[in-house]
Length: 333
Image 1 (cartoon, helix red, strand yellow):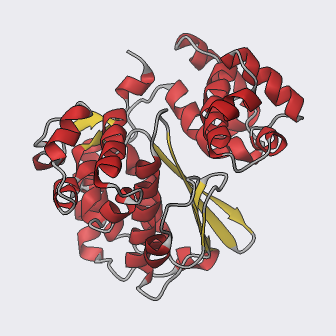
Image 2: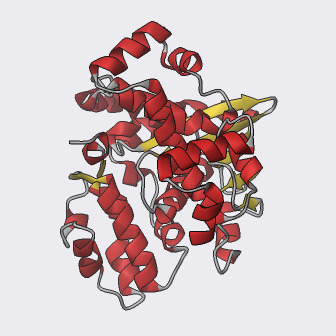
């Protein structure tokens, strides 16, 4: 079984789909079955289902309803409760930053394939997210960003606005809803999905916190301790998906991010039957295809985004993996 087949998400990921589809005259049960999911899956929010199947269901629903902002609309129906047990501890953390840290730490309990991290640049913090499976996932990406934005707004107050919300997707037919939900500073065709916030936001007190409930929630959540062993390859994939565009995707840097030596990283991957460069190629292929299909960047810009020294080096690498040049791939797309 491939690592992709093992990545699962709580069925709560499709919460609200039946009602939203019905509002457009679409049978959600048929959409779910076509994606390989039970028609009544919403009634079992804690059941683990394949991430790829959920992503497919969301894409099918968007087409069936004629709404390329289907994921965004679905996210408006959700909040902390959609995270299940994770929401218990995050809600009662003392600050906005610690609430986000709790969500990041326990995220695999909700979604194995969703990676979230933060990077500090001066007085702003970039909160990045990535979904670590191939295939169409525009709606799933929109939901991931919109959910994070919604949670931030619940923590920071209704008057709060992000400095910028970056989406890798191309602009929808109507961007007004994106601006209404995510604020006025939305950028499409971005290098990665992220929300940019002022760093002092993370220090703000969490207005939802109740100190008396915090320790109780923590004890409950230890039932599903996220510290359980995880394959090194999956840990590397999480880091690569978030660092690829930074140009810092060397084995040494990734090992440092994981808190191990390069030798330990190499040995662990060898025991799992893979290599660092194979995982790096896997991550690059996903981003390269998406960028070429979007047609928003030149080959030189994509080469730089993927960490290649030149457009020709990128073309040579791409042709080795696909049998055609990136220009030909783009023309076909």
